[in-house]
Image: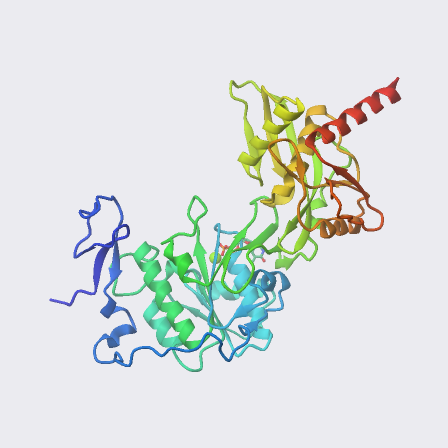
Length: 468
Ligand code: TYD
Ligand code: MG
């Protein structure tokens, strides 16, 4: 009888079984039992017997020799910024995203750029595409002459044998972790046990040999990275690559980063020739703006350290439904409900019986509370069927009592607005602190949401006077 190499472990309570079962007898949970490799049988850990050292571990002081994590910048600024300034040696980066969003394209471009930046070597391991297909893509991207080493492989033991050597490449791309498998587990590639075991083995080699490991991860229907949640704990950095299907913009975001900030975004445009960096996203997001229409407002937002102007669009229409529809794209639905409630309770602007649609143009997802005031402006503009003040950007947080609260980085936001030709900003009152707006921008400071409503009423009466 061959020696058992795996066992089945309940992911909820940790009980181990020799056979798979649908329900854990120890904790009573269903579908939590997953095949895992027995510790001694881990590939490469084949020397489980005999080789193990009995020296224990060496403690070292917290203050080490290396001052800063040595990084390797790819030269693709949008990519490097999200990583916090470049790839850190020996780090593992997981990149998740919808199928077809451009993960393979991004990583092939990054690998090519890194290999040209004088890295000692860059390997691209594809488990999804054949060598020929990757070559074809490289040709299309104009990267055929980049010194990237290519391999098509899915067996982790073979991969380890190739990578666990002193002369390994500096950067290794594995596309994707769901296609990799360790051969001492019976389960199919992509299952929880396989993904975890494969990632664990590859990360261990990366740490030991000091190469940066870039793993592509598939996402589930719900948008989470497929496989075990521990995968995200195991790696140093988790990036998500996202975008709207119909749009050519792609946004790279850090969801976790042990070596940098998590609020930076990288903006790319998908073209025939691959991904192109977008150095000034505001220009891109505002490019399709159509003059003076009601229900639109420009929000001066902030993504990490970078100001980004986006258009927020609202549509209000009588609802045939008992419970009117509230549809939001690119913003938080709960936040919309709050702004609507404040408008109704504090300012007497009712939207009962109206369907409301809210959209952040260009496919960007806004998370800042500073967008409250811009959303309120777009809504008021839609409700009153009157364009929002022209050449104006809006930002500010709205509180439950209808007050408009200050937000950070006013200067940065105003500067970006001025750069793009805006002449006015509706923003929170900067009590005491005198913020001098940049040349060409007039600040309209408001303290409460009621002031904004007043602004629309005034412009309405002004219109009526002109008509008379
Ligand atoms: P891909 O990188 O294969 O996506 P993923 O690895 O995330 O599944 O990208 C595939 C899509 O990108 C495909 O629909 C075509 C498009 N694309 C371009 O528009 N231009 C290009 O130069 C390339 C290589 C791909
Ligand atoms: Mg791919």
